[in-house]
Structures are given as structure tokens and as C-alpha cells.
Image (tube, rainbow, N blue to C red; front, side, top):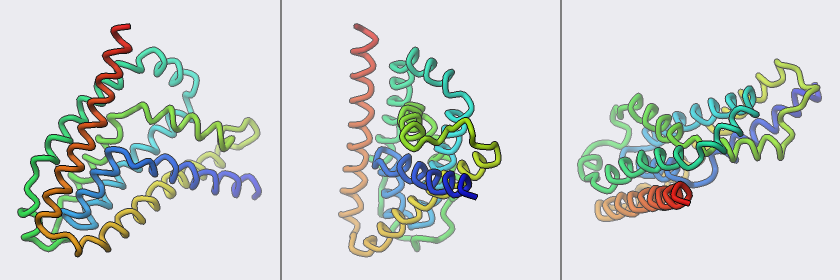
Length: 213
């Protein structure tokens, strides 16, 4: 029972901390919540949470291989992930919020597309494995005396922690949504698009410098 509780609270903590850094997927989630309604943002977050869980599983069951692979291919992976971010950044920058505001915020959004894009957006950045490895070490998540079914509980609560985080984020963003007019939405699209492009450009410059040196 003590081991189950041990894995439960550590799983929730890891799930929240993996999702909490407000990187590109967080910006995308906020943008969709404001433009398309909470449901769209929530399913984007759910897709990101599933991607985080898969990376946690990969880390848990193949830690030594993952560390070696990342160290060997860090710059190439970052370059590919940054190229994907550029595409998303340009897409968001060019979006016209008036097309969304003319509809009710929860009027049959394409939740499948939101979920898949949230998943792919997060999965395209495997460098998150470095954060997961650090969190696993910090919380002593991988212990030799922990049974297999304890790990199942732990991974399920990692997913619960990540989903809970996106639930709270979309809840608070949706509450302030009514205070934004069309011009505000337009500016937010461009600001978030520029921020995502900034993430991408920093990653590309860093990767090119490291590959050239």
C-alpha cells in the first residue's frame, strides 16, 4: 500500500511538471482555447499528455538506450523538431480569428484534429526526454524494489497529472476569453506565432552551431 501511494503522488508530480513548462504546445493550447473554445484547447492538451506518457514509457523501459541515442543525435533531433515548429508558427501567425469568432466557441470543433496535432506537436520534440529523465531521477521513480503493477499505477497517474494540468490551463484561459475582442485575438495569434517561431529559430541556430563545431 505504501508503494502504491509512493508511485501515485510521484506519478502526478511528474505528469504536472512534464506538462507545466509553457513551451510551444502550451502556446498552441492557449491559442486554440481563445480562438476555438475550451474543448479544442483541452483536446490539444490531451494529445500532448498522451505524447508525454509515451515518452515516459520509453524512458522507463529503455533508459540507457535513450540516453545514448539522445547524446549521439541531439543536434539533428533538435534541428528536425525546430523545422516542425516553424510550420506551426507560420500557420498560427496567418490564422484569421474572425472565422472562429463567428461561431459559438464549442460548436462541433474538430477534436480529432486538435488531439492529433497536439500529440504530434509534442512528439516532434523528443528532447523532452531529457526533462523526463531528470524528473525520474529527482523523484526516484525507477526503483529496483518496485513491482511491475506499481509502475502501471505510476504511469497512469503521470497521465492523470498531465491531463489535470491541461484541464486547469484551459479552464482559466476560457474564463478570460470573453474579455478578448477580434483585434485582441488577432494580436494573440501573431504574438504566439512569433513566440513559437522564436523557439524554432533558437533551436536551429543552436543545432547548426553545434553540428558545425
